[in-house]
Length: 496
Image (cartoon, rainbow, N blue to C red; front, side, top):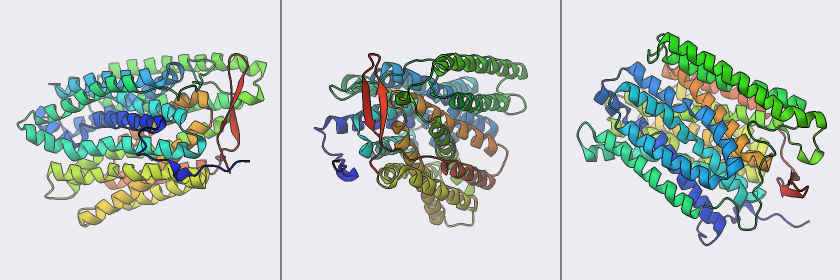
């Protein structure tokens, strides 16, 4: 057997290498989606002042920002597996650019809320790049490559926090925040055209594997089918939770009647989705699934839970952290608070790639256990922070926690491309959606409890993720993809 190439052989400066060029094209696309998605976060105080919003309305915007991403990641995951990453990513970037500009020039809370809800769509961009990067890198490098893609891309939120307040001040006046956010939207739309021109779905001569059926996730056992149906429930409950928070009992953005109409619509969609999932899977399960085509849905379920705790908490914390620092430490300006809060997302530059690299080198399961244990401790320490702490110590604790959170995300997505290549988009979409379910749950908790208890809740929930990962299997050997003509292709997923 030939020796496995070194994980460290990934040369990011070799731009003549098509896979390195593709990685850079893709992480920057993700970077812009995150900059658009969280462009509002460091400017919330200016937005609140400009439109005379209440604190409750601001909290509602935070919840709205992550809601649409739940169904969007599922749908986009299916689309990318069926149509390919290039056209889907380009389209998402262009559409999101227009939505961002619409948010920037909204003149009422209602229009602001609608655009914030629709901009949750941009969060589905992450799923597209996961499939694209997995097409270009082998198993011994895919964790590192996915970590770079996710980590450098996630830095878009930190870049927004660090630069947009200053850009808004440079524009000046009460509308400075509008021009700053609109600028990000323009960049996003233009880059969509660039991405379409230069990106390619696979290396030259490679096959782009597509799922046998579309419309719902394909599983290979009856137990997996029942588990899939059960795991769809939290996504619908998270959306129902959102509607409840927007109703008169919450922020009073929608009427009680509208809330019940939304509940009914969600129930109908859930029943339809469940029937479709059953119909797509029941026939081939009755006929029997060939051993070569089977995959372990248990792995998918465990990674969903892990991503709930890792990315779900990041999404929630990035949304509230600038305001948290502003309100916790006296004398801070919005610009300074934004810079301090950016420390959490700043860690993405190295922590998520390191999580992927560690997973490539030392094993998927072991890496994820260490990262989730670390983030539980980190959030516990963040819950102890108060106004008596030195700001420098508070920032260091925030960065320590962030390291484990984002390294954990890197470890999750080092594993996902190794389950079933033809369904990587759908698997990534479901895990990503669970991250957003986590964000909705955590931000809803935040609307009821103090900042300290918010961090303690995340720490406690992370322990559930730790227990789940104990049951995860390390990938080994090869996975198989069977073409329509019966040709079997094998893909290496483990070398230990």
